[in-house]
Every structure is written in structure tokens, then in C-alpha cells.
Length: 85
Image 1 (cartoon, rainbow, N blue to C red):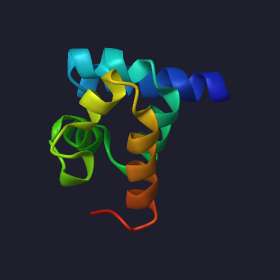
Image 2 (tube, rainbow, N blue to C red):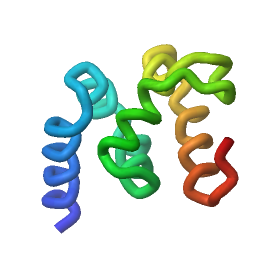
Image 3 (tube, rainbow, N blue to C red):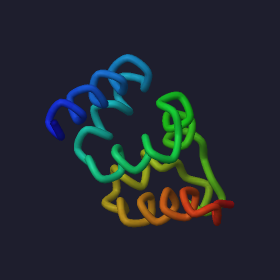
């Protein structure tokens, strides 16, 4: 059952999150899974691509590419708890 859910989420990402973002996000299943709990696929795409003050003006994708996935997870967790910026 969990495998099917992951496959379905991956299909949503492929269809709704732009190509490079989807490929990079696939490397971070925790970020992808929490991001899809917090946001719609379109909202997650915006979260990933929009420079944010909490990321020092960088995007979540940039943080993922530079090994700072924990900061992205922390931001998603804060958004989930209603503590987002």
C-alpha cells in the first residue's frame, strides 16, 4: 500500500512539478512526502522555486542542491504546524 502511495505521489510530481525540480526532489523523499502533506503539488512547486528570507534569499531547491535538506524539512515542518514565515 505504501509503495503505491509513493508511486502515485511521484506521478503527481512528474506532472505538476517542473522537470528539474521533480528530479531533484525525487532524491529527497522526506521533503517530497512532507511537502505534499503541507501543500498541493502546485504549492510545493512554488515553495521549492521561490526565494525565501528564511533561506537567506535562496530557494529550497538551492538548499537541497547544496546539502541543506534539513533546513528545508524544518521550514516545511514549521509551515505544517502553522509557524511558517
